[in-house]
Length: 254
Ligand code: ADP
Ligand code: MG
Image (tube, rainbow, N blue to C red; front, side):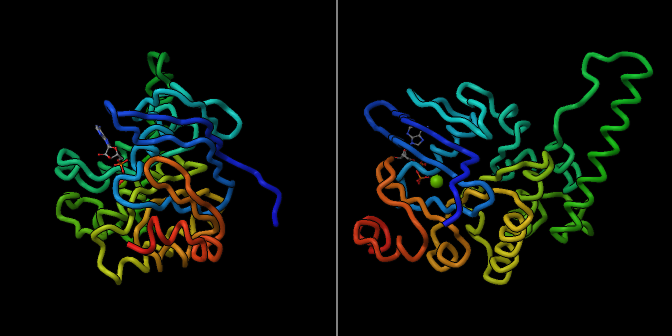
């Protein structure tokens, strides 16, 4: 067993909505360089936990750190700049933009803020050029380069998922969080998405993902965390989780 090397560590994360405790996680670690699956029934708190960890929602209590630096209270766009990103479904507004425009909007913040005059302009141009190059590289990787000038709304369900993943990679993250990346994707594209996810892991990017399809989960995960009613009820390697009666009752049996 490899020595633990968590890229993300969270403690006592609680989020309530009125009287409902959506998330109540005592301890969670994601090991660097793994594909970790977060599974659990509908309403278990998976998406809420993603929102909390990435700074898009605030917990009632809890602390967490990424790459050794505390992240509590850090806003979403800053969390992304530190190397932890989550995917977002393309909003209506984004579907009206082209594929390339979507990529450029997801680019890291402009450098040269605070610089004026010719030097500021030069810095800005350089950043623009770098963003464009990175965008085209990623679009090629996801086989979307031929569609760069198409309106994002014209993409198939599966291609949209690829674009969502490509957008997240614009900040060159150390860790990506994917919330149901296969939802609504036809089986042919599921294989391609899985290939992309394992390729990311093999390049050293840590992946935390939420998924329902047990074959997918068992097939690509290095570690599985089971959430039920906001709490981690079990975790382990796929084979361990599969044989855990509590997990079967809470999740697999349904
Ligand atoms: P999952 O992603 O595991 O299906 P969610 O995190 O979306 O679960 O939801 C967990 C629980 O929190 C659910 O009972 C859901 O109804 C509730 N919840 C999520 N977001 C909100 C919100 N903004 N306001 C009120 N309740 C919410
Ligand atoms: Mg969800």
